Length: 442
Image (cartoon, rainbow, N blue to C red; front, side, top):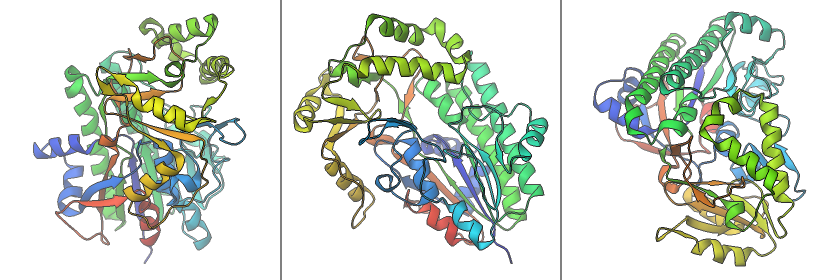
């Protein structure tokens, strides 16, 4: 008998909110997972970098092996900016291992799958993507799916008032689920994966605002209904189901501009442009601009500030390369805000690798060690940025939620199906366990 496995990824799903809604009897789908399956936590990474986590979920490799830390970053050797995509990723994902064994896969909106590439089955590419329309492998499916799901967009970008933000997020979730169910009903498959990103995008904007909690609850209940609907397919195909999130969430208090903190200043033009881009009045207009134009504007600002860096290069929001690592480590460890340290930890790269090894209880961890790289871990409520700013530490006008301290690195984990041992005790699994588990179920 053919086996079937369904993987659901929900970016930013906070188990604390799921637990609260479950205790009030307000969930259907997650209630089944908790009471008739197994639930627990995924140990991911600190900081909880979504690109690194989703890539580890797919490949079963640690981030030092697959080398994806952020969506856009500078190569630590060439110093060239790299935009990660399916063309850059060198390692195989769990659906790639299925293809040679005659197992077909349906992959919908998995991060870093643009452009979609040949697999046995169907791939609908995910974020980041230069286009919002549906792009697929095989190619001929794209136009047909776009006609059936005209409102489908690859990336959901919150805009407007809270009612519009939640309404459009729900519409995006429904469209994504509809496309997945359409494919599952018509195409032979053994493994299916779908990732929902809407919750993460909304929580970055409203997580820390108390008056919006009831609106945020609507989004959680929408995802619960989707999980309940997918469970019907799981039972129909006698499939196993794995549900994960990449991290939790916490309230955002401050954003820290690392370039500004290190004394790096932009010129007048780029500084004014950056202020304009961050102003409340320009947020709506800015996000209506084509993505490529927004990227050019950010790139311009970054390039103007990078030219003024003599001994420091920001590789991404959490890593910097310098010829004076010990000196900058001592300086950054002393940076304070209202009597508290800004950084929970400042690691040399080798120290950081050992920290992750202990976190995941590994005997050893392999990867390229660069003694000139520092890794910055912010304390609770702080988000780091490699973008220049006229203020080193400031409150954001458009973000109220974040997920980069060690307080929220646990993702949610649920499993259900004929090969899942029912348990009322919560389990801890590693980000490296997911891909082997899915392949083992086949």
